[in-house]
Image 1: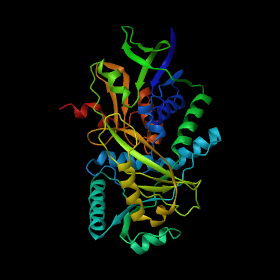
Image 2 (image 1 turned 90 degrees about the horizontal axis):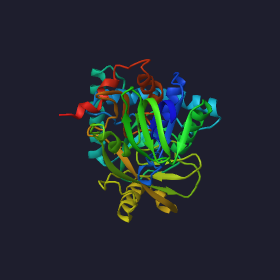
Image 3 (image 1 turned 60 degrees about the vertical axis):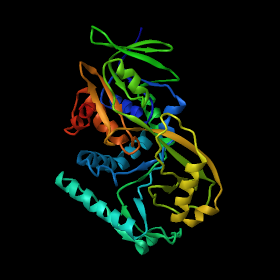
Length: 373
């Protein structure tokens, strides 16, 4: 029998950040499984924003959680670079959400006031402001705005990162610190045992641990249902497109358009209910390209070389799930969208909570039980 102190099922961004945090806080022998199913590889298909803006409009706790994560991001990226030598390409240049027309500009301004008031009631700062067209244009002087752009909401306190390099750096650091990574290994069942250990059955043998963390995206629902836990998540497809490399002209990411350090543009802001179908469609690409060109006309002159779809893990209120299973207090479940933005808290807060060495007062607000109505 293969044994470990803790097994983490799911080697994506959240699972990797938690696994690294477990080792950092004395978790002992930690194993991390990664099945790598094509429909569940969201950590390799996302946009890479490290944002708090617009998150938690009707959920003050989630707004605070997202803000806390952004505050920790520069130190987290620096730590990974120091310990692995890998640059995750974090650019802390701020972020913007553009407005097309006066009505949208007004709606953005009102949403800022709403979230600022919500955050103020919870004691949170929300450093976001509206920029008119001229101010927005001056912020990004090397690229011309489309005629319909009336301005943008903006904050200097967020940025973007290379999610592939982030995933690589966290996995590398995890293994460097003594963790065991097992890829391509399907987990078929999680079985609590009378001796308070947990048996994890896989396609390559059985493993036993004192604690188990299920963080395998949409694969988590199947594993947890056998334990009597309904995980309240649903799939949502998003599609992205990437351009050829060109001169760097956009230093500040916009919600639907960003330019990477190597010069490629990424565009994408689609939401589709397609179950686990992650294929790309001409209709979505045409719509996204049209919206991007309205924002930045120069994008219409580039060659677009690749597109892909990925399946988001969504909860009914948009906020993450961090939960300890009822009746099985050594089995934990983690499920969320925004795994890039929230990675620092998975490392610094969620992992210590799992170990029982510290419980942040907000953790209980993200229990799966909040949806049991």
